[in-house]
Image (cartoon, rainbow, N blue to C red; front, side, top):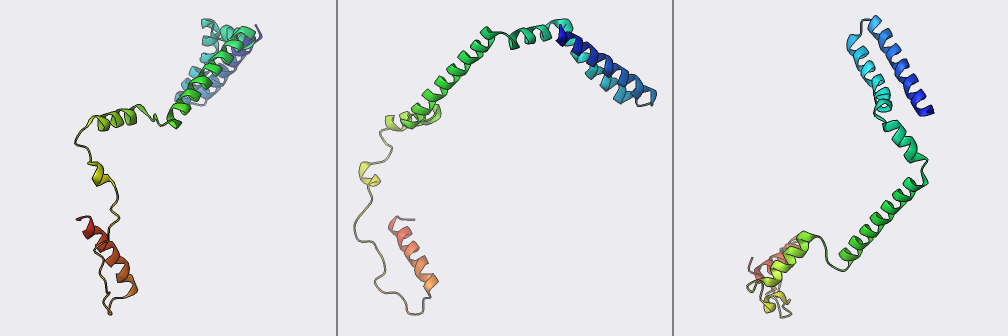
Length: 147
């Protein structure tokens, strides 16, 4: 009952401000203020305010919010555990299943790193500066992999 009275008073005050604004020849602002001031009385008339007041003071409603919160926590916990186990997202699981089903993916020997001697130049040119040494190593690695 108090909520309905407060909403009615807010609407009446808003309409009064809208009238003063219209008197000052600011009609667009006055209509906007009137629209905002009619919202609380509309909520009272539709019963939304009464429903909110009943819900706010109802222990059953708060218990229901608690149950919903518990359900959300349980859901998020299971998602976190699923991701930690390596399940990942649905897209990642589908991609992994597709890759596992392929027979021509990558040969096991090609996936293993080669531990043999590389094609690194034995001697370095005397005229090369220190910066060129880094690039020669990179070039040797790229040549080794056929790039």
